[in-house]
Image (cartoon, rainbow, N blue to C red):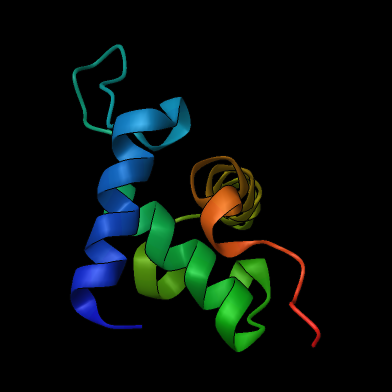
Length: 91
């Protein structure tokens, strides 16, 4: 996946899917960025990593990685489904 396409996906998800928006907790600490969440989801999906395998590299737990994948897939279907997820054309 090229960098500009990846950043386009991250940008759309962070603007249109609540889960990917960066938030602050009660102590004012920032949550994981949309880039971290999308990278975790793509690593799990593309490379077949177990959800707990991305925790060392991206500093997030297995449960968070699974949530990233779930929200990523739902977001991709909702945002890009009409354009990219269609039945194949058979001549």
